[in-house]
Image 1 (cartoon, rainbow, N blue to C red):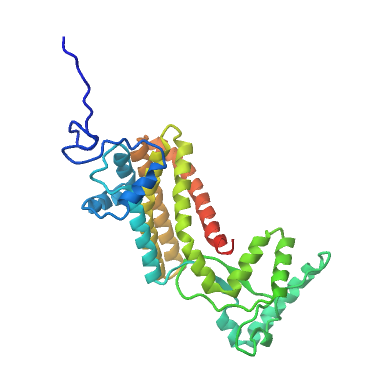
Image 2 (cartoon, rainbow, N blue to C red):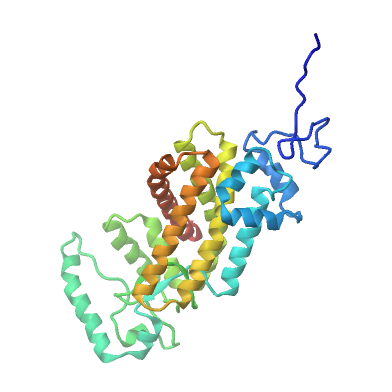
Length: 347
């Protein structure tokens, strides 16, 4: 009676393996299910290598990123571009397109606008002062009483050198992915900085946010440049958080597989974001903007559902039940990443 031996076969083409590489297709016999730290070696060896399988990978990526990730995690690696290399290439292309298109990853919007301040319209000045007069009694209720920071709206807002001063009704917000140029900076004195910190801390806002506001008001262009430089870190954070969300929902799947899925998913997600931003710049009207946002959200939800089914081999109803959890978790992750983008320039 003969002895039967199990000959290992290539996970990609099925050919019998006789060494560390497949003699048929050349794929490594190393199992992909290994510690996460090995992704570093993949990065060094694969990131900047261009191969002919990129276009095949891109086609499958945009049709079904979950299926691509599953095939790669199951060992079919010779025919696909590795996830870290693909993610890096697409993220670099994404930020290059944002820069060429004049898109500010984190924008600063200061009110009133510099054009409005320079116009010195008497009717608008009277309205601004009236709003402040109605707000001041609320500050007087504090012990000790608080005062508004900056100068009264009017001629003092423009210095003899032509620069703009911080006014008592100056406000700032930080929308993401906006076109146009940064606003004019506001001159902020040391007393203004102390005043802003006191006002915000009295309202329970941490001191770092007072620093953030002062830094963005004093140098909007520099603040936006530093925030843009931090955008790559925020995207890496999104990859990690998305992998963590799926790890919580699929605890039996190895961590390395969640990371592979997250890298491919974000490689497919970034071009969708870029396309939505381009269309958003051309859309006029609130109704059209709402419809575009709804269509984008629906597309993302469908892709998340399909990716769950393909990568984790879930049933359609199982993926549907997990979909709200994934979306809520991802929205929270987006909030964390956006906060990192805004805070990193002042930390």
